[in-house]
Amino acid sequence: MIDYRIKPKENFTNKIGELVSMLEHTRAVTISEISNLDQSDLDYLPDDSSNSIGSLLSHIVSIEFVHQVISFEKRDLNEDEHLKWGPALELGGKARKEIKKNSLDYYLEELSQVRETTLTYLKSKKDSWLFEENKWGNGVSYNNYYLWFHVLEDEINHRGQIRVINRLLKNK
Image (cartoon, rainbow, N blue to C red; front, side, top):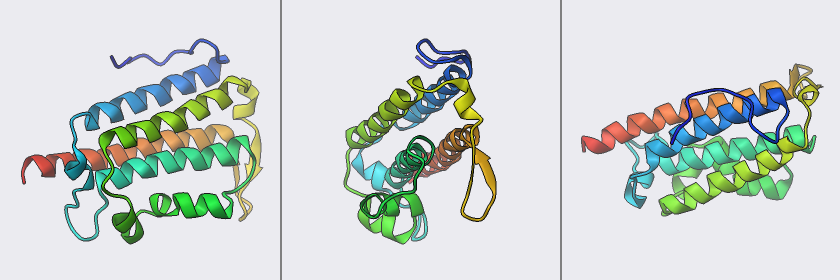
C-alpha cells in the first residue's frame, strides 16, 4: 500500500528520514504504474525516436546509481561503470538497441537493488550531510540534498513518460 504521508522514517535522522519517505513514495507509485506490463509492453517504442518503458526504468536506476557514486563516494563514474550505465543514462539510439528483452522482474530487481544500496548509505549519514557542498567541474555549487532531489524529480518526470506510453499501449 502506498503511504501518502511524508514523515521521518525509523533508523534515519529526521531530514534524511523525510527524504527516504519521499523516495519510497515515488518508487511505490512508479511500481504501481508498471506492475501489469509484460516484456513486449516494456520494449514498445511509440516511434523511432522514443524510449521504451524498459529504457526509462533502466534510466531511473542509472540516475540513482550515479548519484550514489557522486554523493556517497565523492567521485565520477569509472570507465567500466560508464560502459555499463552509459546507454541507460543517455537514452536515445543506443538504449533503443541495447535495453530490451528484459522481463518486468528484471527491472523490479534493478530498482530494488539500487534502492537497497541507497538506503544503506543514507542510514550512515546525519542531516548535516544533506547540506555538504561541492562544485561541478564548471564551478557551479551543489549540495547532497539537491542531488537526491534530482533523483526524485528525474523519476517523477520519466514516470510521466511511462504513463503516456501506457496510454498508447492501451490504444494500439
